[in-house]
Image 1 (cartoon, helix red, strand yellow):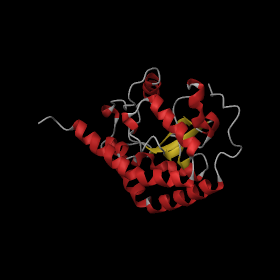
Image 2 (cartoon, helix red, strand yellow):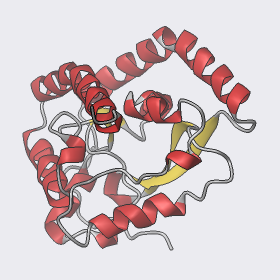
Image 3 (cartoon, rainbow, N blue to C red):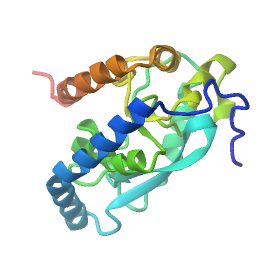
Image 4 (cartoon, rainbow, N blue to C red):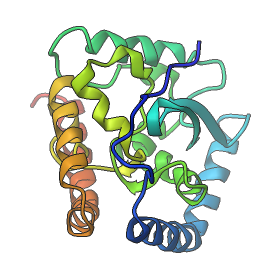
Length: 221
């Protein structure tokens, strides 16, 4: 069932002119510069897991409308994506940390690395070009808008982002409520300066997550 959109947006235009300009320039430059990496990742996926290179998954974006986001496929083709959705829905019922589901057995070779480094998310630059996403904003979620509390739905009055305040503020060390508080804070403070700061913090935050993931899987001495 399609989620009902939020009735009254805070703005008629989901994205300011300055933000759309940055998105178009950033996505175009990013796709151009990253094209060699895209080729390498595509070849890797084809070698180690026959099937499509890209994976399209339904998420919920501006005003709660469903969109299909692009990702590099990091899991085997037989994997059921509903398992992830049920896991996320379970985290909304309490205030547990937003830890990713342990599904290493379903990942292709180096699939976990693709996820830790967020390389699997880079094809969403296509969504940015299409105007379905922005470079910065709340992440498009698998949870329909009607599953959110009223105060949490503010995240849907802006375009979802490739990165955001939540991603650079601890991400997997936060709870569902903390994530929504960060998203609400971003919506209320959105500016060119905040977007620039978040983009500058994104790569260091990814490196920190990779190091954290490595330390958690390292055997005890």
